[in-house]
Image 1: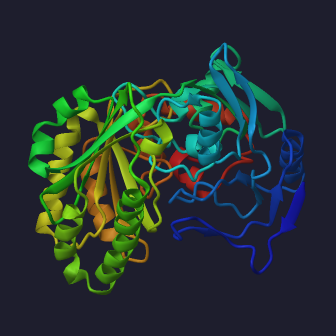
Image 2: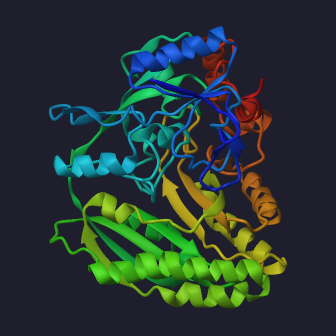
Length: 439
């Protein structure tokens, strides 16, 4: 186990560049025992403890001035159980590595988010999700997990073992302990056919229920300052495999979606007045395409243009009205927004603080290019989302607090009581958790 005391350059920063922290020391444990020892040692020294993944959260959920645990040595697959169709993986494993390893074994997760840079524990702890009619977030695919608690004990949690902890710790916000391993349900690898096509905003809203009902995975991007969207439907396919040709993939996913988009955002940041015109061009840059590939290659795409993001889950039946209000707000404001708004869905799940807990949900994500002022846009959007009892993504920008969450999460008290029991001394506390869970 390596321990480094953070000095002058010991500043940790997140991917979006909007959060930084100066931990007293950083620890990189090479085993679960070493991690448990680091937690016990922190307690002796009176220091708080946080584990950090790849920093893809836009909130300060992982920030600490105490002990920062980096799990990069806790990686790889522990076991594959083909009878139970599960895979147990170490907490620091990047989703990308997990997906590639599973594909090699002829296996796949059922659903995924749209990027795979995060560690598995970071992704589940914040409620990372993709889009799905019946299949939920990454955390909803968990069958068991291993947790180091505040007193340095290692607990295994599942529906049978410590079920009340399992209900909450699948999306635990780092508040209940440090996740060291996760057991996911997997299935034999399958093919998905993706159909991407432009569609007018008014048509997507008019047909939303139909588009949702007819597709296993439906999502769309609306370009502010335009009436245009790009839609994406992913459905299981008997094949044959027909990936996007390499050159076309480079041109559309790298050159247009990352390279040209980056330049467009630089121009927009320097001269905001140009953004509506750029948006008209951007929204028409990608033409319709259909391709068939293995799941992670269809669900995920490279995201190299850095941004800051806010995302809220609203009840699925409220999504069309919420989007109408969002577009009306943008149209009548002087805001200039160069990033598309992303819309996805998830079925209700039974995880205590999941954004889809107990209700079918739709996600609306607003983004701003890194380095542009985002407060005015996010504040106006948040006002609309919260009017519909929206629940913010735990890892994305929001201003909500415990009092608000106690109203929009029926089982909020269940989570805070469990936290009182597992971490009475608030070993895993930080400013963010103080705000969202209460002192």
